[in-house]
Image (tube, rainbow over all chains, first blue to last red; front, side):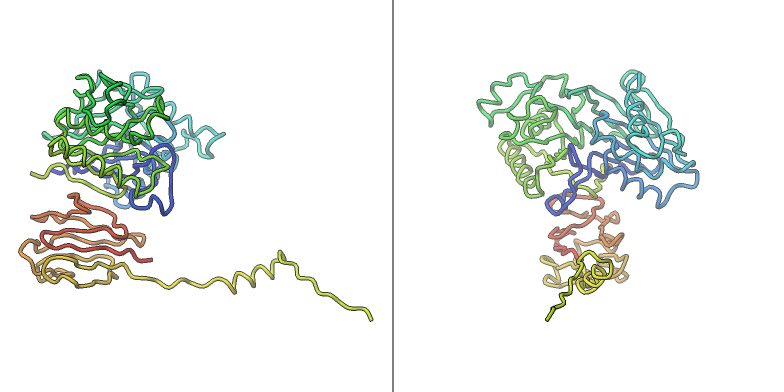
Length: 295
Length: 126
């Protein structure tokens, strides 16, 4: 029973508190997926602090058992970890998933070196367990999680999460525009469908919900090529080609106000309408929970 | 005849304290509100003061809506850290936040909430 997705941090690059970003939120990358028995966390940006406070309000009697997946260890995806209250409780177990070398785990702990933070990683009371993917699939509680590679400076991972026939894909920090089959067409004819290779579409295929990095507008992107993020319109085309049902645009640019994000969502909705498709697009917003297991 | 001048030291602790006491006033509180903009009972305004209240058609609901589109216990409003959240209580027609079906959400100023044929606009208090 129950497949819930909650957005705790949807901002890219750096936290942006303040009135301009109050509605969508200013915390960096953090997403929770849960069932009645399992809690998965995707990314440990500053949104993780609020998630931690929520978790300790009503912890299970046996303590918290959490599964933490990191897309990659850039600051905006790990900065919340030193402020994650459950990590200070001896009754908590945190499984940290990474590649075979599990460099994410090393970098997560490295940010708590004395030069950066007063509390040492080794002094955290929780049991923190590095875990590696066997191949590209793990069973985490009652979820199956598949990892896939993405195009980002230094590399990043996307995750396809499955439970009882429902699928959510978490795909932040991927420069889709460098993977287009015909990049020149996207530049010369922005309205034309941007085609992505089958290997990129495969992990997204038929997802009920795709949470995807859509940091830039078409106009902004040319000055940010190689920074590792996608144009919102390209993400829409990806979702359309992959048969996705619902698309959450996320990793909002720190320069974008709530009104800017609204405008990007409206542009995306127009693009879907022009394609004659039924994809539902919205802007990921802090504090919103979706339920995936509705009929 | 010699004149005496008095100088005021702006940074003296006592002067600063007086200035702060003179300038500081607790701000008046403004209630969180829901205004019904569509559906039976449209135009009603509800000031939110309870920490927990239920919206629904049933007689035990705190904020009653006389609509068959609204479940008896449709949604729960909860205040935490002076922010209100809404949560769907497994209603038949769901809760839509600005057009998006949600299970739960922290509310922000200007949000619209649709429960069946009933629509509310939320005004954030302070």
